[in-house]
Image 1 (tube, helix red, strand yellow):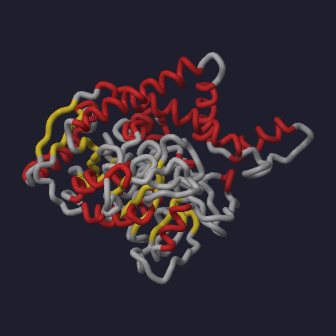
Image 2 (tube, rainbow, N blue to C red; image 1 turned 60 degrees about the vertical axis):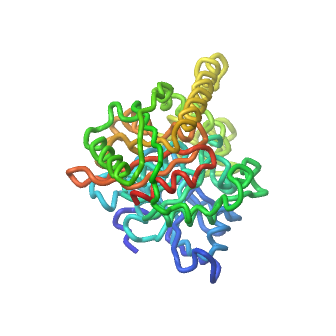
Image 3 (cartoon, one colour; image 1 turned 90 degrees about the vertical axis):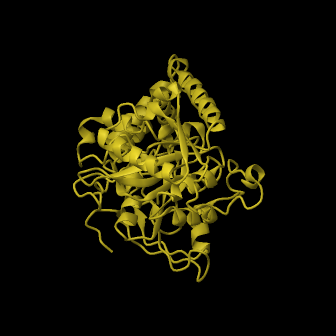
Length: 430
């Protein structure tokens, strides 16, 4: 196993069952997904030595399916980042684009798959954290419908947005992994039975990866191409031409609401993070602040020493957005924008089978580039956050490369519990 790109935080092997649909395969697991007896750090010094006493539901399911877990993958601290550079364990380098970031926050998961050090991987997607690294590393990543996959055992960043999703070399393999992890879970009340929505055989996702896009109607929100790097849009339109040659059609979609997606996403996510991360106080979880007679100072010291700069910034901003006098000004407006985005995306999907856009508006950035300009990193999430805000599924598939050899991903967004639609569309390209 190669480690020169820093894709893993822990390489402790976890064996699965002797047989099952994933027997003989390796599935790496993002380090914010609980693994019994194997440390789960969330990429943070705060949880450097935390060892969960139980498995997350998705880990139980891949083990029961026969998969071997080769290790826990590197990630932006607590999932807060787009490049896997905010990890307390150092940045991950893109193994297929040396000197560039692999995307984030599930950058380690995408990197180990792209490097061939795992057959598949699990990541979590709060605002694009599976799709962004899939696009940057030239692999496939799926963000399922909110409520399709159990979140039990996931260290929460933003509860209402995040979902566990598969990363794999091909759409069919990603769909096969999704089949294993999807479905009701008595430990997670937010999970819905997809058979109620889609009828019998709702979880037969791999069978949908047949590449047949004849008659597929693709809506293209032009707002998600405005301002995108020309190298990315060239590859995107070439991929759309390829779909047309296979019988698909496309039309432009006007979704003005998407111009507010980044703002609505970050206010929502940071607000939820400020609440979720309050538990890390050095007493119940996390490193100790060294009690010296003042609990407030002890808590503050533990969080100052345990959290990185990006996490502290987001917690502070989220706390501010929820504070008295500012809740209506920021958080309530973000929820209004979210409702608008969800309604308009659903309306657009009434007129199209799937929506398509570049997954990321830019090619992989150079290592260190976005850390100097956080706003650039936040704006890079413009194309991926709408699917999380609307709680609908999305997939990123390799669309090609720029002239200078950097991977470009194409994203398909489908209706709620419409995983088969996006899998079928994506399989025509990967």
